[in-house]
Picture (spheres, rainbow, N blue to C red):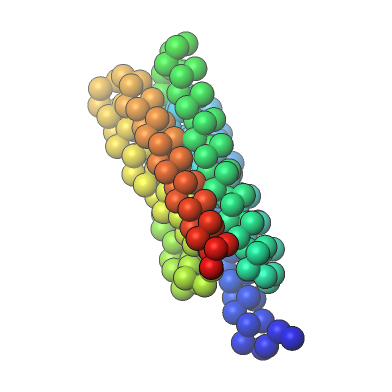
Length: 197
């Protein structure tokens, strides 16, 4: 039988995840459109990152009220998605490197500042619940990765605007892929340890 305290805790966690989910859906759409307009690998990588976040928040939302095994499975899906994202970004960077790109620094900087604000808000929302279980720790890892990606894309946008060269944007796309892969491996490791426990 579920106690009132557990039900209240689950409802709070679901509310937090729901807000984070819709913030990431809106942000992913805005970043993708801006990435296409600005011809930016970094912004498109950020958009894919936020899309995977939205999917993970959806999984986490439904996992919160279920048992430990369900939460561990949800975390594993999150880890695999993050690694898949890194592969997709690597492919995009290779394509742009091969065929050329002309990123627009001003658009990259403006969108990245907005994205960083939203990601900081998500981190503040998750701060109070992230230690509850492996599933919520995975959501936290995704948001931290987003913020790191935002900072990298911001620097790249400033360099693109200053140097009028595409390589900083390609470099940050590659860095985001590596950060995403590392985050995915951390989540899978955490899920493995939780399953053993």
